[in-house]
Length: 299
Image (cartoon, rainbow, N blue to C red; front, side):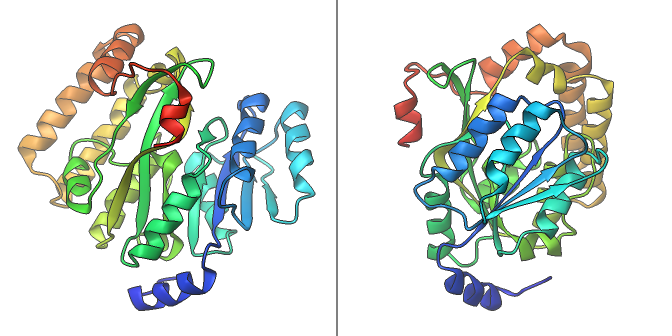
């Protein structure tokens, strides 16, 4: 489905505040965190009229119990897959089953701030040319009252496209986008731990207009396991191949390619998890002096 800007304008105006939330859950997700994530969706100041949940393969009874408590709600659509197909494929299936043009992504272990969707829908209503709106994330350990850092992302279209040449310019769990713009770029495709980055690059190639809000829209759990997921040879190969894609498509030049790959080799292959965690917190996150969640959720 590929719509031009004029058609999107008509569709979004007809929807007013209608939008979908697409979410995936699989066997290793924590059921308590999963429930908190769902609660943060249904308790928004602006509520979705559709939540599409993809159950990526068999899940334990504890997760099924959470799903069953929401399945009776008319606006919940549950898609159960017989086997685990991976994050990118599950995302693609979720989008195919969404009814609305505007779709917000959500992860199964994070927490939306109460006015996340209201702020994002307002952006689309005020600027019909925008393809995608994301925002910052506030990272916490154990409790939402223990905010340890904020991952800030560039805000305007040009800054985002420049930043894209070095790092992923969106926090995936914060984004809301037009389905037609995602489909025009080929949708989600499987790419180890980088399905989202690969999609944003292809949207850029198709002339998408990007935006990030200055606010933290989602609260994200962090710990040692997060830094271990961002390291290792397989992760490095995935990111290197993505850099090759940008080089081959003239998004970056050779000098930038070499620099990007060298930095990733040091961080992802040579560096132990404990040191990697320190580097991320020291140089890739804004330090929080006041841990009060109220300061984050109120923007």
